[in-house]
Image (tube, rainbow, N blue to C red; front, side):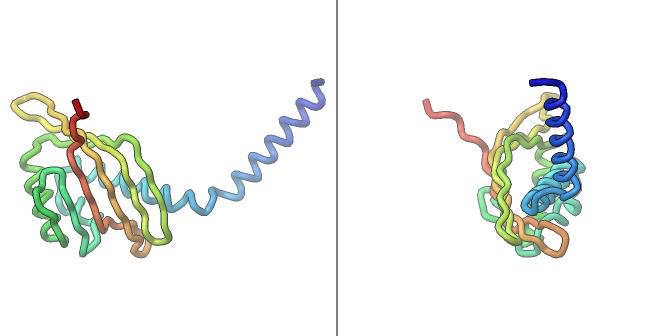
Amino acid sequence: MGARPRRLTRVLGSLLLLAMLAAGPPASAQPTADVAGAVAKWTVFFAEDSPDSVLALYDDDAVLWGTLSPTLLAGKPAVRGYFERAFKALPGHRVTFGEQRIRIYGDIAINSGYYTFTHVKDGQVQTIPARYSFVYRKRGNDWLIVDHHSSATPAPPK
């Protein structure tokens, strides 16, 4: 291929890229990015040790199967109580998200994957690998959690 066809290919490729950038992201990319942003907020608020901040991300009638809870918790007062207890039980708590699968269905979004909780016990960092599903409902401009299931990752079968 000569210099002129390569240059023409580069110019056309650049024009195509500019046209795609000017058009903006595909319609389905924005809600996915918004849900990913809600997950990022949850990560930060969880580490802040503030039940009020975390609770603001949940819908009024949200349900939670917490990693440390033997019972299903329903409504904001129950969800708040869970986080208050969890934060006390896990000093220095943090969470790191691994693989996430975000799917959008109109004003409902589901994010499933795994995360790892860390905390400090007796001066040692402890980890709790877990799997999760967050179900969100769009309320105005916000994606609020309506269902949150979290469970410790089981050991592989022997």
